[in-house]
Image 1: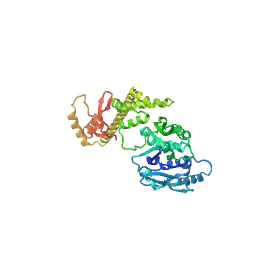
Image 2 (image 1 turned 60 degrees about the vertical axis):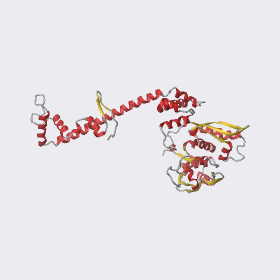
Image 3 (image 1 turned 180 degrees about the vertical axis):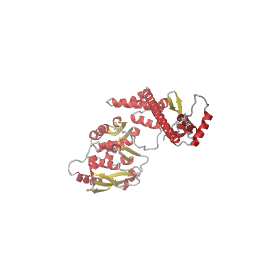
Image 4 (image 1 turned 45 degrees about the vertical axis):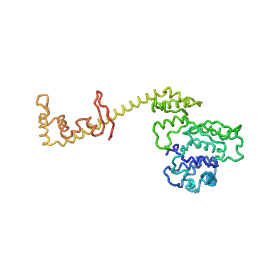
Length: 429
């Protein structure tokens, strides 16, 4: 897998679990999680080169080997707290072991078996994201907020209490005791980092109880400036084209029910109009204050109609070019095969075939001064001999259209400029 396509997958329970980590420790856990294959049924020993680890985690200077050892040693002591039932909870470490191979330059890391349900054979409530999107985040809180919001991205919004966020991030009693500090150091910092480096960004509203901010309502938007080059693997059953379009509309900020507009214009036109809206939003160089309204206007105006017609015209012209190229190839293949067969037959022409040829001429051609199948020495003329073999020995090469249909599964029609393909291509050998 290409470096910028590496994926991190984890249960939403793990994303919302309570634990404390440094930025370096969190990056290491994300890197290690990306090593898990989706078909793994059990944890493996995951090998990471020291150079790769230090580069991704951000360790610098001398003695990086000792820094790495200290990093994994500290991580081994980090405790993850998970609810278990209504009144119970379980505490577990992320790592069970770290084995260093100093001369070979790598470390083997193992997850604790207790967290297998959170990382292996994930079904239902889990989240995927590209590792590259958290690689440049400079705060562990930014990574935690990114993961939380990615898990609710398809809903477009999620409310968290300040108490939940503090508990999830395990901020100490002395950290960010004033909301304004929490807002500045965590919320606003994460907002800027996500907009600059990830595939989503957020706005937020403060919800008060009395005069005190009690909750944060996150409004989650797709960051079209940093969108992934390829969609993540499906987390649910395979979606229809209409369902995928509805998700795209929702994640882009369109809040209205799209059923009516899709019924009116169809999936292709609505998607083309959405792409026009996103392109204009991306090229505007500024944040659109109401992306939902902007998109709704483009959909209503059928902004993508010209683009769709142009695309269909281009597709039609491309198909015509491809068909013409295929016909030319078929013609070359037909002529090559026919000439090869004729060459072999003419080379091995026998006296018995000569007698049969004379009978074939008497049956198929009248005797007059314009029809001269024989040379002065009595031998057959080449053009007539070829006709004889095509009629008697290789009749499949008499008709190009029939040959293309029977041999290649392609239906052709003769037209003034040559041939055109009228049927579906079954095979092309």
